[in-house]
Amino acid sequence: MKIVVGVSGASGSIYGWRLLEKLRRRPEVEIHLILTRLGERTAYLEMRKRAADFRALAHYWYPLEDVGCRLASGSYPVDAMVVAPCSVHSMSAIAHGVTSNLLTRAADVTLKERRKLILMVRETPLHLGHLRTMVRLAEMGAILVPPIPGFYHQPQTIMDLVDHSVDRVLDLLGLPDPEAKRWAPSPDAGAGGAGEELS
Image 1 (cartoon, rainbow, N blue to C red):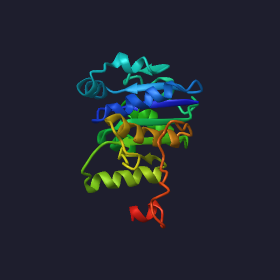
Image 2: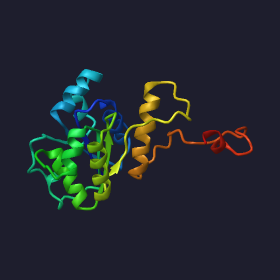
Image 3: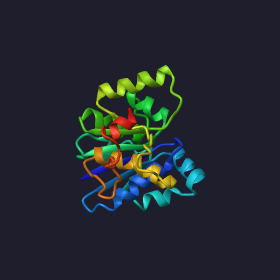
């Protein structure tokens, strides 16, 4: 299974890092990495990770300017693409077909070939333009997965919160993490079950 992972310059580089870590554990997955310049900068500011650290988790990596590489062609078969995190800049470029770099070109190819494109959009609050762009992407077939953690699994660490969002992406890729914490109402949740408590 070939997965393209794009890491843009939005805050939340830990999501891209953790996704790469979890995908690398799967022998059946081949990882193709696109790391933007701002993605490199944000990763260093937030995690003290360098581009070389990210590249070490991928099987293949590509310069952002290499719009002539195999990922820029629909004839090269990949199964899915995830942008984690996805900046509003990248999201908007993808929505409007602006393919000025490899990340947006690869995403455009993913959409035109009717492959799975997952965008972990990292922005808040959202204005009307953002929301309309998201609707446009959803209509085009993209899957929008803002990293919004749940708390029913009683997270104890930041990584617990990160994993909650990354594990949802893995589910969408058809690669569920067997160690993922899932919703399981306790027997003493009441006659109506946990759904009653959440209403």
